[in-house]
Length: 241
View (tube, rainbow, N blue to C red):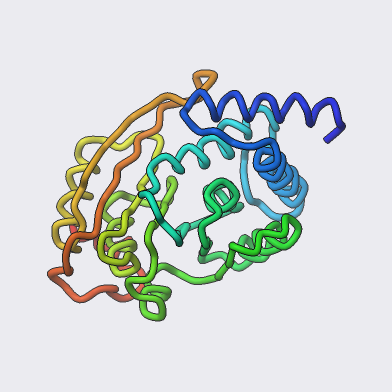
């Protein structure tokens, strides 16, 4: 990005973040823009995103990611980003919160790209792992204060993925463009089976009329009624609700 463009994009990002209640320093915003620039460049060789217009991507990738910071519980020290893709929302949240971040994805090429972004940005609080959530739950059970999933899968599936990974009292932040009542009800029912309680459901509009977002928050309040994790693929193809 040219210097003038960089300044314009920086102002754009800071203004949109503030409009959604998120304050960022210029250094944090600049790091997020550098991540986006790296994504757009690598996307020429590896399919990471369909959104390549910088102005649009600031809203739909960076702002749509960093807004989830406001749902982090006070004192959260670690979080997991399930299905990180190009590093969203994991990298912006790692920059904004300073928490220890683990970013996972089942696709090796995406993980390799995100690992290169983390190295380029010097984010020492980020770890990138090529692994499915069910596999990670076997090696790091009840480990994370927060699990974040942004537009990854159906709500009930995400709830099941998150439950064995969350520490007691930890929170799942499930974010999607739109969650129908039927999907929300299924997620809540799956939560009851998995030891998670739905504590809030919120909708808001992104800046510049770029869509509505729904965020459901679940808290781990007990033990699951079934053995978790189930085998790989079960949560996706045979959801609990």
